Length: 360
Image 1 (tube, rainbow, N blue to C red):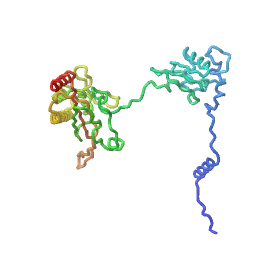
Image 2: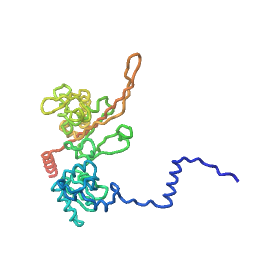
Image 3: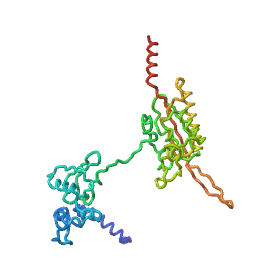
Image 4: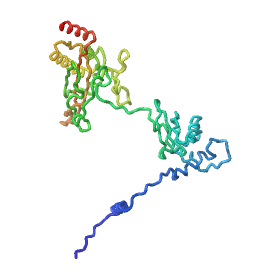
């Protein structure tokens, strides 16, 4: 009979296998919640201060080493409780003690959760409404305001949304080809071509700085096509500037080193190269409008959507001394442009009257 081969097992592997066997044999028992080594029932019997549940620092008939909730709290909470509870917080504690299962509403966002509050229901005001909270043991030592947020997380739908008349367009298609996390450049338009009297233009892989294109797009969004083109021609001639509001100060996401310009603009620059590319794109979109619509003046169309995205990564070589060269990489830019013509109410009335006369 062949002998069974002995397999070497490390101590760590043996402990892991033992844990697996124990988990298969018996289910894990759910541990009782402990806070600082005490159960909830034990914590409720401990007084808030060494001299009792009321704040009486002048009382000298107490043992400073006596166990209390204030001494068990973290240092920040301990300092706050050491100064005593405010009148509003004291009223809140009294209401919780006499609530009998009812919801207690309060504006005291800075009140810390005490063990005697566990099991009660408290409505904390977040600036607009009361957020109903069921106090559970892990909340002990935290302030009520931590569980009632006053601000919502910002979610952006897409380029152009929120600007003049651009909110008429519905948001954007999201696919794998447009994700920066995939390491790919965006392909196709990011906004759906919906609406009447709408034309578009697109430029791909331009050798411009994405930061300059972003600020130009933000400045001309919502303008008429002809006005925007004249504005950018003045920028090229350094008669007017493009406002730089994003990353315009040191320490806030970067520093553009943009000086303040005349008027109430604030920081601004004259991006020459990027402005010329935008002028070409506006002219291209206006030519598309003239070819598509015979009864619409392209100069009266409105820029409802303009966006600048990062394109492909261009790799070049920077020459150095003694025949050496270093590789350099920079993002190219993709621009997309939507023009739309909005019919005035007077023009619609004239067209209806004209069509009515023809029917008669």
